[in-house]
Image (cartoon, rainbow, N blue to C red; front, side):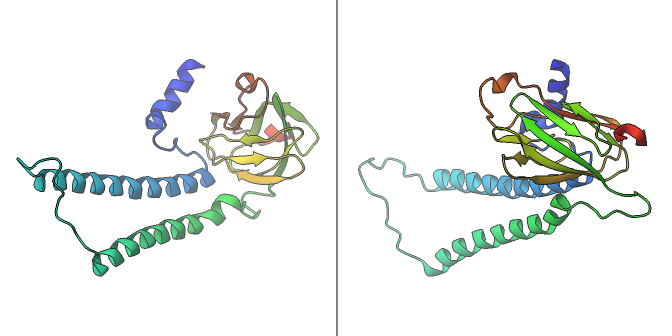
Length: 223
């Protein structure tokens, strides 16, 4: 298990970048993450470069530390520019995220190629996750999915708030008592994908087993 954790951390550059996406909605989430990372990294580099440039260029050699520097009064053009630029940046980020959002939150409609979407009920409990499949079968802490099928999850909580999150498969979805939230997956390859605890859910939170998803080439995996 330790080697698996180290491998996933290394794949995500120690947690500084999104983990490798394996399914469609995870790809869209990662695209949005990379846009934010790119914009913020560019701003950081620009600000730090300007800061170093001004420190070096305008430092006053031999001047007493108690002497005030030259005073700069307001400049309407500059103030307008540095107000407009953040608005443009935020608009670009928001526009891209909302462009990707429908594909993240809304499951594809069933078609002749993929067949009917599979409906699975996910119930969060204080110390475990329970999955109920269409035929009434259940599993604990392991979600089994068939490759190529669209699977819709109805996420509930039986006690306290939880956060359902398998990083390689998509973003977090809250499990809240009295409310049903939804997410979806469509495996495109076989494999085992591990969940991550992301929300304090009560006593012994740290000992709660991580849930995971396993994608199989067998179509009877959920039947």
